[in-house]
Length: 197
Image 1 (tube, rainbow, N blue to C red):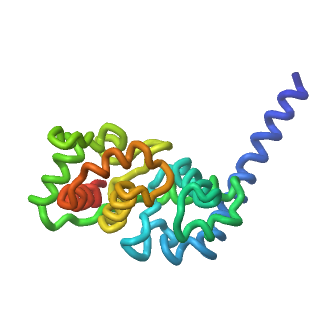
Image 2: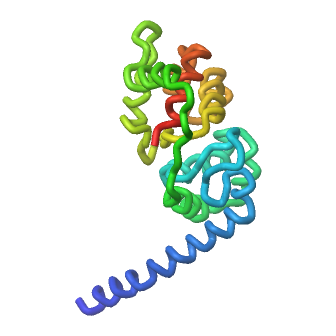
Image 3: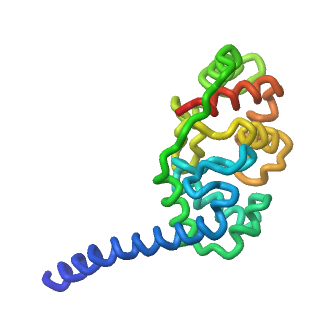
């Protein structure tokens, strides 16, 4: 019994140090690579790069693993090539802990179209409501991305990539939705989602 208790105490005393090391390593990687495009706080330097602040840790780690394995194509293939599984998890934790922000939406009428599509879909074209998977507030799950507050331009590009099957991972469901969206609907959705908090 004393031996088991000793192992538990040892494990509890190592865990915070291990977590601190992982956090330090994530911060180092962010400062060496990630900040150029995604910003040190995950808020992105440009609307063509996704905001990572507040994104689910597991989702970030999965996307990094997909880039490393070539299941998802893009600039990130090279960035993720030398990351370990532990580093991917640490980066996920790092960015998920950062506070997300929302964009200010200027065109309220256009935002209303996006609101309708996000919450009700389009029964005439067979587009499902986004909230069915990404949640009422766009916060997603550990398997589905947080959309709330994402850059409009990035959202538009991802929906277009899903439609054309250029986005090579997580494609099955999203292709069936994106392929039915008009350009107007894509822009309206991106406008609305970018303002969600």
